[in-house]
Picture (cartoon, protein in one colour):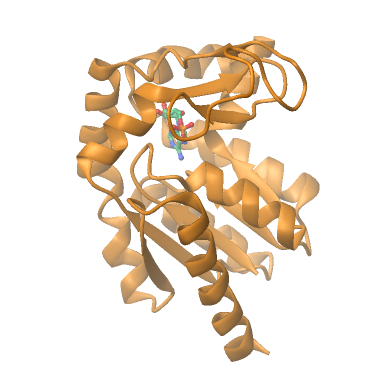
Length: 220
Ligand code: AMP
């Protein structure tokens, strides 16, 4: 199945995408991760994207759309995948929708993670990532065994530059003004499902898994 995860920053999209992708052997395509990798490597995309990301603004549509289309065409043809954090504007949704329809691989399900402001701020300010493998931790909810060190690879953990209160506020404004309208857009297409992003990761995962099973039964 081809799935989009939609929700504000800190809703748990990335955590769920990793869990689902591992269990179902789906590809996990996170725009944020791909952009950060480009920034790290100093590519043209990375150079163009960096300032927008640091401010909490969206990277311009055309850059992100081209990057994601290239990624999908290169590695996801004929495969099941999860788009995490993409699309984030109506323009992106229309463009990627048309392109994927033309490739015969339309988006089949969109999950909206409805999440409170309190949860978002708590999750993002406590989030720590591994510099080496990208694994996700939380200082309270999901601490590593040894403080500051990744359980999986021993890499150093860091706080994302855009996970500070000011930038979080900006990213939430951006979500409300540019991304939220995708909920109705996909509802109208009849492919929207909703889960509460306030619940703990295991509970959300079980709910998602149930939804996926039901959808698959309908599809087969
Ligand atoms: P994320 O890791 O999903 O929180 O994304 C981090 C940052 O990457 C965002 O604040 C944006 O600057 C940028 N970004 C990620 N996905 C998109 C997208 N679909 N469109 C535009 N910018 C994006």
